[in-house]
Image 1 (cartoon, one colour):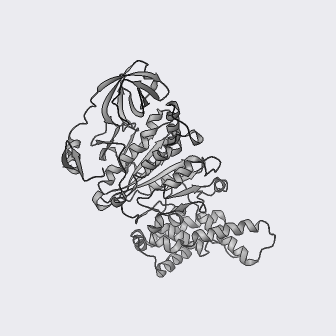
Image 2 (cartoon, rainbow, N blue to C red):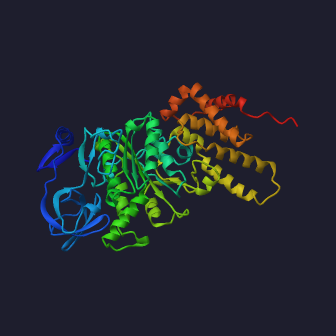
Image 3 (spheres, rainbow, N blue to C red):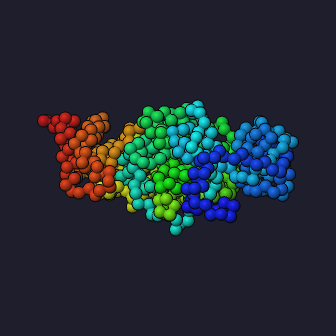
Length: 514
């Protein structure tokens, strides 16, 4: 809820009073008025006549209990997207107005639960209590109701936190082909919020049931599900549910942000969302545009993502950080939906299939990834250490390509290639293994200073695990300063290197006596 006061029945009521009153009373049943007739039914949509006073986005109820949303208003007919199976609707069946818009439950009772797009439980844990309902469509806050993004979101992933930082309130797109690790990167970011006050919402749209089950299991195993809400709309569900799912997730996030809390929202993914909307639009005979998508698909995603941000004190000073995921085909970043979302969001993390083929995980391409906002919010310690990381890796990759054509390389070039390869290897990270900022610092410091230059790939992995353990054991005071976003002093950098060198004494191979 974006306003501190509401106008109800021409009376101004404080939001807190209104919310408490709703929590104490059950949600009212929709009032059914005015009956229409179903004239056509297709897979996911219906054509209705006889409801001349129906409004756009109004919730309708069919005689069999299925709900629908008015999408098209035309003289004498309504185009309705269904929120349930179309098989239960017959031509000639009555349909009724409710004079309400579609809403979703919000509140503390949703934490730790798995629900569908309408907020109905899917986890078999019984009914959801301590919730109220809010409309899924609201206006985004104005510019004057926002504050600059100034606090970092720790993802626990070295390649992101060091080179593509994300701030609380930012919209950062995760983009890449299939099987490049997009969902894993987002889930690892959620897992890294275990010891923070951030509430996480994972919205799955059109994903396979086993994939969503693995995400839920990962959240359960890490003991973070109690701080999360999982919204699942499978590919077997009605496309209308896929259409409203991200709006329902955003509404749930806004409830917590209005209370001054920070929320992390993952939408997985907007490619399936766009396809569901295209399917509905084509069935309703709306004019197709580029790649057969309707002309308003940009607005559909823009009005959703514009609801993210860092709010002003008048709105509770909370934030909504959104990580929408979009899938590309054959690395085609210029496709319609990817280009739309790149222009809407505040940056993108691009996962490259070429890096996947090289077994580089996470497969973050630092050349095509960018953060247009989070650099101002980046952790100060990481900013001190990783300022030249992107440039250094870009120069290394260019030199690596050039060296393939040469047979004789001087010692300086060989040393630069060895250092660049060691830094690239240091950016590797296992799945479900988010790292603290202190651990990222000591690993990157060691790689940039050449402590990994003479190690093999397997030895670098062992070395990283060794110095991470040493940092947790010996640098607890520095770790607290880093978490508090303190500037990394030169003395602290020397201390990091000393601890790393001592830890690597048993890992570094002996010098060749020959």
